[in-house]
Amino acid sequence: MENNAVITINNLVKRFPVGGDFFTALKDVDLKLNKGEFTGLVGPSGSGKTTLLNIIGGLDSPSEGQVSVLGQALNDTSHGERARLRREHMGFIFQSYNLLPVYTVFENVELPLILNKVDSQERRKKVTQALEWVGLSNKTDSRPAMLSGGECQRTAIARAIVHQPALVLADEPTANLDAENSHHIMNIMLQLNHELSTSFIFATHDEKIMAYLRRIIHLDDGQITDDENISNPKAGT
Amino acid sequence: MLFKIAIKNLLGAKLRTWLNVFVTALSFFMIILFSAMYDGMREHAKQVTIDTEIAGGAYWHPEYDPLDPMTFEDAHAIPPSAVKALVNQGKASPVLVSQASIYPNGRIMPVIMKGITPKQNIVNMPTQMLAGHKEVNIPVLIGRSMSNDAKLEVGDTFTIRWLDANRTYDADEGTVVHIMDTENFKLDMGHIWIPLEKAQTMLAMEEEATYVTYAEELSIVENKGDWIPRDVKYLIRDMEALIEADEPNAAIMYIILLCFAGMGIFNAQVLSIFRRGKEIGTLMALGMTRSRVVGLFTLEGGLNALLAGIMTVIFFGPLLWYFGVNGIWLGVDYSDGSMGLIVEKYLIPVYSVGLVMTTTIVVSIIVLIVSYLPSRRIARMNPTDALRGKVTV
Image (cartoon, rainbow over all chains, first blue to last red; front, side, top):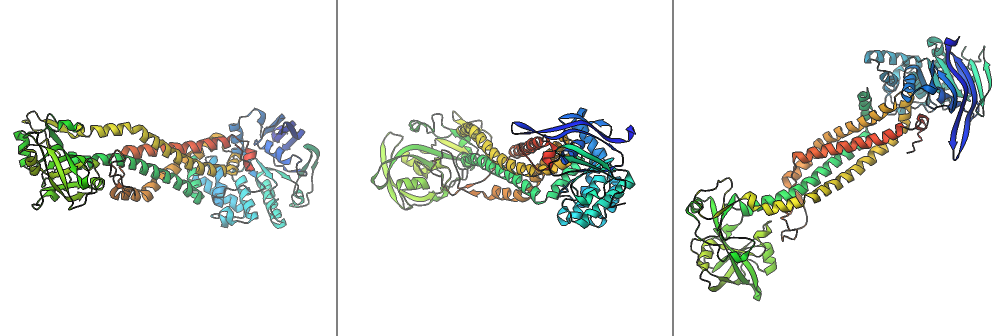
C-alpha cells in the first residue's frame, strides 16, 4: 500500500507574508493520494486549492510540515531536483493554458520531451500520439492564437501527458471553457487516467468537473473539511 | 537542447525578435559610423596635409623653421645638386618663402609670400593658375579664407611690399589671378602664392629656394649638402601629437555612443524578457531549471547579437560603404581653420578592422549582459509568481 502512494502530506502549513504580517493559506493539511487516483481539490476561491497544488508540484515550498511526492521529500530537495521531478514525472495543466504563443501546437506539446532530451524520432512519435489522444492531429501547425479555448486546453493536456508522467496537476482546467468543451476535456483526461494509470489532481470549484471525480477533497479556509471517495461518479463511467 | 529552444523562440517571436535585432544592428551601425567619422576626420586631416603640402617629404634649408618667420630671411639658397636634379626631373618642387606685407583696400596685412613653380604636380594645389599672366606684374594665388579676410576677388590688385636678399625694401602691384578652395587652411590663411621665378627675381634670390618638396615614394638623395631631409612622419608630427592628445576625447565619445547603444539594447531586451515572465514560469513548471532558464535567455541574447551582426552587414553595410566612398555632408564650413584641424565639408568615415571588431565584441557583450541580468532576476522569482505573470524586480 505504501509503495502505491504518489503523494503523502503531513501537517502542512503554508504562510504568505502580507504587509508586515502573515496570511495562513494552508493549516495542518494531512493527505495521501495513491497511484491512478482521479482526485479533485474542491472549495471556494481562497480556500487554498491552488496553493496546495503548487506545493505538490514543487513550485512553492511549505512553511511547515512534510510533503513527499513520488517518493521524494520536497522539503529536502533543491530547486534543481524539484525541476527534474516535474520534468520527468509530472504534468501541469493551467487555467489559462500557458501555451507558448510563438510555438505551434506540435512544438508546444514537444517541449517537455525536448527538456527530457528525448531523441527527435521518438519525440515525433509521442507528440503525434498525444495529439491523437486529445483529437488535435489536424492542428499540429497552428499557433495558440489560432485555436479556440477548448483546443488550447486540449493542447495543454497533450503537453501535460506527452511524456506519460505519473502525476498530472490541473488548476481549474475548465474554468475558461463552455460546458461541451469541459465535458470533452474531462473525458479525455479520464480516458488517459484509465489507459496510462496517470494520477490526476484537479483544483476546481466547477460542478461539471466534480461529476467526473473519484475522490473529492473539500478545502475551506486552508483546511481539509471533508474527503469523500465516490464509488459511482455521475459522469464518465 | 537550449540552442534548439532558443532558435525556436527567436524565429517564432518574429516581430519581437526583429525589433531586438534591429535595435542592436542599429547600435552596431551608429557606433561604427560615428567612430569611423571621427577617425575619418583625423585621418582626412592627415591625408589632406600630405596631399596638398607634404607629398613624400621635403629638403629644408638648414636655417628654415616654419614656426619662426624670422628665420625666413636667411633660409634660402640654391638647392644641392642632387636635389636640383630631382626638380629638373619633375620629381620635386622648390618653394621660396619670405615675409611680406600686402595693402589690400588701404589696409596693411602681414603675409607669408611663397614662390612655387606653376607647373609643379608634386602637391595638389592649383598652381597652374599662376602660369601666363604676362599682363600683370605679380600674379597671385590666394585661398578662399584669405580672399574673404582681405576682401580680395579675382582681378583685384594690391600692393605687395617685401625685403629682398640685399635687405632692401621693394614693392610692386600684385593681382589676384585665382582663388583656390582648399581644405588645408595652412596654405590659405595669411598666405599669398606667386610664381617661383617671379619670387626669385623680386627677392634677388635667383635659383634659390627655402625648401624642396619631393614626390611620394622617393628615397632620400645622398648629396643633399647641409639641407635637412624631412620625411612625412616628421612633417605631420604635430598633427599626430594633436590626434594623440585627442585620443581620450575619442574614447569618451566611443563610450558615450556605447552607453546610448547599451540603453537602447537594454530597453528592448529587458522589455522583451520581462514580458515573458509567464513563459519563464511555464518553462519552470515544465521542469526547466533556473540555470537553464538563464542560459536560454542569455543564449537568445547571443543569437540576437549574431543576427544583428548579420543584419548590420546586409542592411547597413551598403550604407556604410556608400558613406565610405562619398562621404557625409557636414553642412558647416571649417576651412578657415577654426577647428584647429583640417575638416572637410564631406566627412569620409574610415572603418578600421580594430573599430569593427571592438564594436562587435563590446556590443555583443552588452547584449549578453542585458540578457543575462534580467533573466537571472526573473529565474530567481517564485515560479508561481512568474506563472501569474507577476514580474516584480
